[in-house]
Length: 157
Image (cartoon, rainbow, N blue to C red; front, side, top):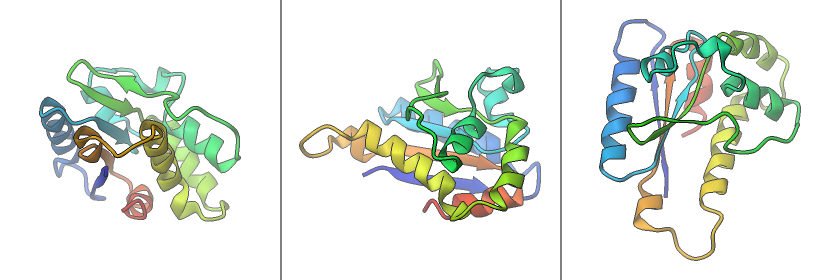
């Protein structure tokens, strides 16, 4: 079974991004599949993994969350970037600030991020038979700086 770990704090400079990167890469080095989700409009996690212009990426977390809210189809792997250290990344960028405003009028807004993560899980584990040891030990991390995004991530648990 996969695990979701959210690292959230409204205050800046508390080590959320550093902890997320180090923990995620450490688990990947142990053979676990890891998805890092950058839910910060500043895109610091995305930038720290070497994608230095997150605002210029064609697909980000904002893209798939928007599609989810509008009930538009999207592929679970859409926008996921693969890092040389063995982690996958759903990048964040400035577009997330507009999503925060859109969520105010969205039904079940607290489940939008959870729905995306659940869809990723289904995509990765849709094969028949029991989960392998590797699949049972997967992890998804979310890195948040904004209070509303942090509250949404807590619903993922």
